[in-house]
Image (cartoon, rainbow over all chains, first blue to last red; front, side, top):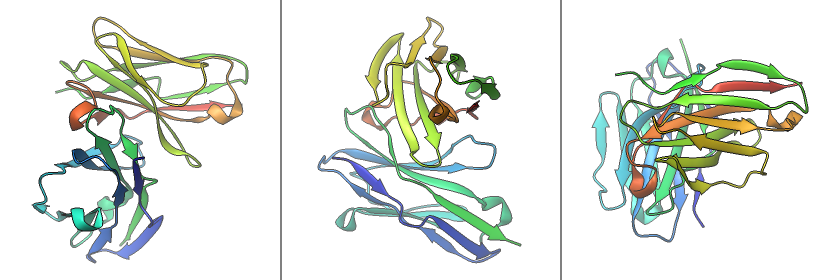
Length: 114
Length: 115
């Protein structure tokens, strides 16, 4: 069975702090894809990153970085120098090859305080 | 490039009524999938359509149905509404579907309240 666990329900940080959002996934498939989405209060889920199971290279995009570790089945997301605009709910998702379904975690609500 | 457009954005219905939600995908995208989001159950997959054919379905009762038109626009319908159907309904589109890890892009959703 496929599963995504985001154990952190809610995180509050002060602006300019770094914050890491955890994502742990479960799958027996060797080919799979992992995603992060951001959901601001407007409701739309905004795509942030896609990573396939054969690419464990970490990625950095501005203040965002992602750490993919197959050994621990984790795909963590770090925001450096957080800003109030980063306040949102962040979802991690898993798609295994051929299933046609996105499996989402329960989300982590991030509050960045000014 | 226009994103995924969902209408209506907000609606209130009475228990027992039916509702139809509409989704226009990103131009050129042939796959549309639907999700229900509630505080208790999170994001749950409803169904996916590709080239007018339902390719996959989640674990929802038959009251939830959908269809896709030749221009890739999609509608979902919920009949005999129940209070528990109150949720944010999100539509997402992709070029070739959610298989093989294709990225899906979401609309802003339709907020449905059943009273």
